[in-house]
Length: 415
Image 1 (cartoon, rainbow, N blue to C red):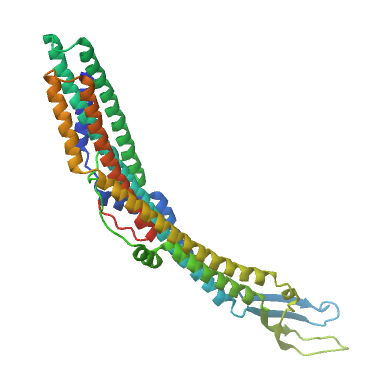
Image 2 (cartoon, one colour; image 1 turned 90 degrees about the vertical axis):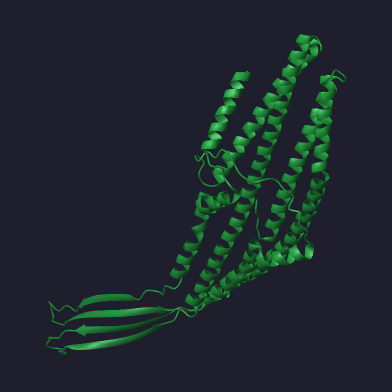
């Protein structure tokens, strides 16, 4: 087992050296440039711009032609050709439609900002989780090394008769347990690296290592400060406010579309000579001009106007609700961040040093035969738990920091 473990460590070391470690900046740049889901979301902006361009189209004119034959072959009453050009005219519909499309384009752009904000927050949290997985694997490996060293010493002491066979066997079992725990943490770390590659749009990149460390941001914020930032930068709040403008422009479009659509027409008829002996007539060209106005009896039904007015009220209430929700989210995120900071400050370098000092002391007196193996294992477990808790506390603090910045709409993280 020991030989296989050494070989696996060598393979992992060679792979780690051959693979370039990934920094947070490289990673987040890849997320923004190569994430396929974000790339698909970005297409909504040019799509909305194309629809805005399409909204400028005016109604097409119509051209009609007709031919008439007044029994010309029989009684020679002549023939005629008529041409007519007509153009529908709407009053304010195109401008109202353009305003609707313009507001929709603004919302598409703002929604893209919101999508990117959430994507960056999720990707950053995944990076922090990977840092934690890496540190936990280092802790597990050091534990395995300590137990391996202890087992080697116990084997020699057993041969000398300084300890019992049970203590020697117990140490070997602890080595196997530490080895399995280490392999489990390595698997978790590798899976976390795979998740990073997926976020960056290249799951086949096979990243082997990342750079950066867990740390307490140690920054102080006030609720008023965070609220002001959120009111200025939070994209979903901007989108909700723009939705009110969109509903208002849609209501104007509904009113414009209820106006009668007038149609102007110009026509020309070319009539051939009538050679009938009873009623002869010369060849002539006639002109016509027309105006068609529909009678808007259907406008007595004002259901669509009522619906558009209610849509405006609905959008306003949704914007107000989102603003209240935003304040609640900021308060909760700030509470979580402050709690995570206090938790992180509980575990200090001095506390870890003390736990390590106790472990070394237990090992020393154990090797001199002055204490039991159980006390050594308890000291080792305490040391491991303190280091794990410290790493997890820093990870929770950084994650809470990311969430706090996300709810304000302004994510600026350096790792």
